[in-house]
Image (cartoon, rainbow, N blue to C red; front, side, top):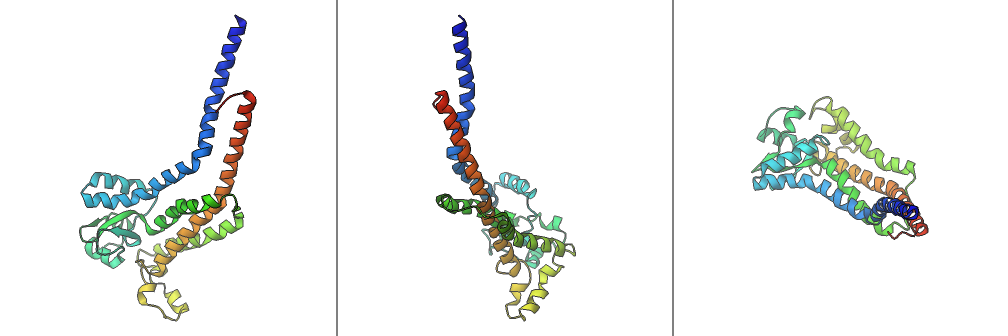
Length: 255
């Protein structure tokens, strides 16, 4: 009787220990697939907001705008538009079709209309920074055995341009939307002897200096983040998976 109770207890212990080990083993083999799926959904949803607006599904679109409003300022002059006359619009164009206000709380409420198209729920910087993460991860995956992790100081160099650009935008906007030094970029025009088109220096529309900086620095940050963190994360997962497998073999348990 005692032997049967002991065997039953041993079986329950093995069963209890096996379940989390199997879960951990399955995660170690599929984590990258799930990462791509989940991040793909996260970076894809902002683009569904204008699609839903186009279809007249305002409820789901509003839910997406609301969800991403906690992560992004959603200023229309720094956002992409779909199904309209242009992919981006200047502050002046937004003011003509929406409101002459320079209040960011008022401006961010504009999601578009039939003529301008509808706004993506992320600004161009957020699109660049977050979309570059799963894309960089897809490039990293086949090279993971050969590509070493970036040193931390190199990652800082990758992230620094976005930090400088973001902070300078923030400081500039303290003077008011469309009023600060990053709106006209007179300092850059002076440095380049006004050799480029005026539209390159002024505003936030696609093709402007501000737009290029947000897109490029965001992508640089995403690439650096993946290159720095994923080798560590992958090594940790592989090491844990080997430990689980070794323990399971010693215990005579199949995962």
